[in-house]
Image (cartoon, rainbow, N blue to C red; front, side, top):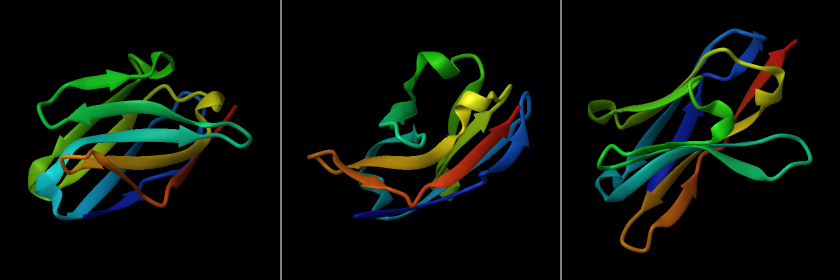
Length: 117
Protein backbone atom coordinates (compact mmCIF):
# COMPACT_ATOMS: atom_id res chain seq x y z
CA UNK A 1 0.00 0.00 0.00
CA UNK A 2 0.97 3.65 -0.01
CA UNK A 3 0.95 6.62 2.36
CA UNK A 4 0.63 10.24 1.25
CA UNK A 5 1.64 13.37 3.13
CA UNK A 6 0.78 16.83 1.77
CA UNK A 7 2.44 20.11 2.62
CA UNK A 8 2.67 23.65 1.31
CA UNK A 9 -0.77 25.06 1.97
CA UNK A 10 -1.35 28.43 3.56
CA UNK A 11 -2.84 31.88 3.23
CA UNK A 12 -2.10 33.93 0.12
CA UNK A 13 -3.52 37.04 -1.48
CA UNK A 14 -5.46 36.92 -4.72
CA UNK A 15 -3.04 36.75 -7.64
CA UNK A 16 -0.37 35.04 -5.57
CA UNK A 17 1.23 31.62 -5.88
CA UNK A 18 1.68 28.51 -3.78
CA UNK A 19 3.30 25.15 -4.39
CA UNK A 20 1.83 22.05 -2.80
CA UNK A 21 3.87 18.90 -2.28
CA UNK A 22 2.75 15.33 -1.74
CA UNK A 23 5.32 12.78 -0.60
CA UNK A 24 4.47 9.15 -1.22
CA UNK A 25 5.87 6.22 0.72
CA UNK A 26 5.25 2.51 0.79
CA UNK A 27 5.03 0.41 -2.35
CA UNK A 28 5.28 3.43 -4.67
CA UNK A 29 6.19 1.29 -7.68
CA UNK A 30 2.55 0.18 -7.84
CA UNK A 31 1.19 3.73 -8.17
CA UNK A 32 -0.40 4.18 -11.62
CA UNK A 33 -1.48 7.81 -11.20
CA UNK A 34 -1.24 10.69 -8.77
CA UNK A 35 -3.58 13.61 -8.50
CA UNK A 36 -4.77 16.62 -6.60
CA UNK A 37 -8.36 17.16 -5.54
CA UNK A 38 -9.96 19.92 -3.54
CA UNK A 39 -13.00 20.36 -1.35
CA UNK A 40 -14.49 23.68 -0.37
CA UNK A 41 -16.84 23.96 2.63
CA UNK A 42 -20.25 22.50 1.82
CA UNK A 43 -19.13 21.25 -1.58
CA UNK A 44 -18.07 17.92 -3.03
CA UNK A 45 -14.47 16.94 -3.58
CA UNK A 46 -13.45 17.75 -7.15
CA UNK A 47 -10.52 16.80 -9.33
CA UNK A 48 -7.96 19.56 -9.84
CA UNK A 49 -5.16 17.81 -11.74
CA UNK A 50 -3.94 14.30 -12.40
CA UNK A 51 -0.69 12.83 -13.67
CA UNK A 52 -0.32 9.26 -14.88
CA UNK A 53 2.79 7.12 -14.67
CA UNK A 54 3.22 7.65 -18.38
CA UNK A 55 3.24 11.41 -17.96
CA UNK A 56 -0.24 12.28 -19.19
CA UNK A 57 -1.88 15.18 -17.38
CA UNK A 58 -5.46 16.29 -16.96
CA UNK A 59 -6.70 19.54 -15.46
CA UNK A 60 -10.01 20.90 -14.35
CA UNK A 61 -11.15 23.66 -16.68
CA UNK A 62 -11.15 26.15 -13.82
CA UNK A 63 -7.38 25.78 -13.27
CA UNK A 64 -6.06 25.30 -16.80
CA UNK A 65 -3.28 27.73 -17.55
CA UNK A 66 -2.81 28.59 -13.86
CA UNK A 67 -1.93 25.30 -12.15
CA UNK A 68 0.75 22.77 -13.10
CA UNK A 69 1.14 19.23 -11.79
CA UNK A 70 4.59 17.65 -11.85
CA UNK A 71 6.60 14.95 -10.11
CA UNK A 72 10.06 14.13 -8.89
CA UNK A 73 10.46 10.38 -9.19
CA UNK A 74 13.67 10.37 -7.18
CA UNK A 75 11.81 11.90 -4.23
CA UNK A 76 8.51 10.06 -4.82
CA UNK A 77 6.86 13.46 -4.66
CA UNK A 78 4.17 15.12 -6.75
CA UNK A 79 3.75 18.87 -6.83
CA UNK A 80 0.99 21.30 -7.67
CA UNK A 81 2.24 24.74 -8.67
CA UNK A 82 -0.63 27.18 -8.32
CA UNK A 83 -0.30 30.63 -9.88
CA UNK A 84 -2.74 33.52 -10.26
CA UNK A 85 -4.73 32.23 -7.32
CA UNK A 86 -8.31 33.38 -6.89
CA UNK A 87 -10.56 33.41 -3.81
CA UNK A 88 -12.59 30.61 -5.38
CA UNK A 89 -9.50 28.38 -5.19
CA UNK A 90 -9.90 28.35 -1.40
CA UNK A 91 -10.34 24.75 -0.28
CA UNK A 92 -8.69 21.80 1.41
CA UNK A 93 -6.42 20.19 -1.16
CA UNK A 94 -5.96 16.43 -1.08
CA UNK A 95 -3.38 14.24 -2.77
CA UNK A 96 -4.64 11.02 -4.30
CA UNK A 97 -2.88 7.92 -5.56
CA UNK A 98 -4.28 5.10 -7.66
CA UNK A 99 -2.50 1.95 -6.55
CA UNK A 100 -2.20 -1.58 -7.80
CA UNK A 101 -3.99 -3.46 -10.54
CA UNK A 102 -7.34 -2.69 -8.97
CA UNK A 103 -6.47 1.03 -8.92
CA UNK A 104 -7.25 1.31 -5.23
CA UNK A 105 -7.47 4.91 -4.14
CA UNK A 106 -5.42 6.37 -1.31
CA UNK A 107 -5.73 9.88 0.15
CA UNK A 108 -3.53 12.20 2.10
CA UNK A 109 -4.74 14.16 5.11
CA UNK A 110 -5.26 17.36 3.14
CA UNK A 111 -3.74 20.82 3.31
CA UNK A 112 -5.69 24.07 3.59
CA UNK A 113 -5.31 26.73 0.91
CA UNK A 114 -6.94 30.09 1.61
CA UNK A 115 -6.90 32.89 -0.97
CA UNK A 116 -7.91 36.32 0.30
CA UNK A 117 -9.41 38.96 -1.95
